Figure 1 (cartoon, one colour):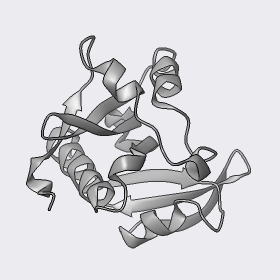
Figure 2: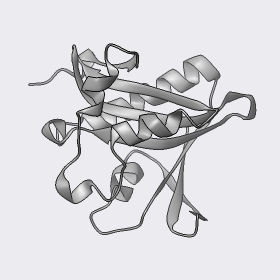
Figure 3: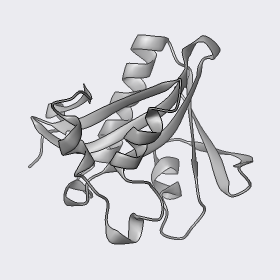
Length: 150
């Protein structure tokens, strides 16, 4: 049995980023999230990026990237993934809680926003189970916005 007590967020650096880039989602999920390598490349062209590897003990199992504007108290969950080999174990739920705890402790954040492409097998249900609520807004006309009060 996996102990979620060993799950943690780790800053990315020159020695650990490559292992996180090697993580991937299931084939049928690839249309919903870009690769971690693409996400890290995009981060170089964004001013307000907060990203971490998600580790179980010393093993990278996921990745998170936020567009964070602490001065405006806006935090947008831009990318989130758990590797295909670690899905279905509750690690995604635990990782979101770690992210929320970190945002509250570090930035005194009060909400977290994300968006999903509505689809039968997409991540919307996952986020709603965690308490994210549909706002009714669409991002770029195709992604449904969801918010979590924290």
